[in-house]
Length: 467
Image: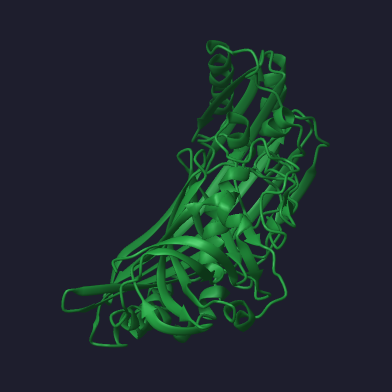
């Protein structure tokens, strides 16, 4: 961090305390990004941009105030501080809802995630050429492939947090994400295949991708699904792959474990700490230190990130916390508060969330299933946290008979009650993969996350079908 910028942030914190704030936090944010969108052999999108600014957050008389500016000067930062304090003083603090934070040991640190190839050193033409190569492989797979979309994005994020607890941390993190969507068509039947790869990494991630493991994989899945059958409907035992498992863990329990939702009454597990809420086989972890797309060293409150165990052997043992939710729920903040940019205050977010591995092979998980459904590849999911209901739409599936895959299925969605599903997990594999890089939306903010699981089995899930 340029010394003059650090001096600026520290002066604003001092100014906030002098003006009556009991807590003051100033966060510098900078994001440099470039993106490419290729559609059917044509580069339709080539973008780049820089977003930078300062966000100021204060507590004044038990009330939060927040303001931000895109102009990184002393005058603009002081104006943001004045606005934040004015905001706090203009609202009413109701009894029991006063703003407060837990006192933590201050951190002073500087982190830079190193890469082999800086994406900013690769000229745009080189990036477009590489994306076109991957797209072309999928387009040439079959005459039934009608549309191919490949999207690439690299982001370099710089965040510095300075607060009145004595914390000053800065972190520079590069991320790359590339996705391929293939649409295959035969008559009126249209199916999709989808792949994505992302991590905290440099351009070496893109150079090391093979079409066979990426775009051709998506194309093959789309074409194969043209011959698949609609799923049966009803209650079935399901076996899920690491991607569907990751989606389930993220949607069904991850959001319910976020401390701000717990405190506000928006979580079905808010009153279940220390209780058994899942099968003995279930241990669920959110780990921002894991080498995956949601990795970081410090959150946006300057708290050092550590692995968080949410469920251990079926028992609820922890929530994800910010400084505020930890104070209000008696928890411990371990780096779970992040903000999309300087325009937003930090809120509780997941990072890399997964079901811990067991000791079974996929064959062992399948062998006891007389009739069931194997789910593979997630498309999307959502959860109604307060109702404890989840829905997941998957890319493809197979009917299981006598422990063996039989017919391929398409257009499959599953739904259920979160706590019932967690208790009905009866087998967990040892093949953990965390390969669901993407953006998670919450309260109008999007944030980098990842999710995963080993293969596992749930006895009794509603499968939506047309026969």
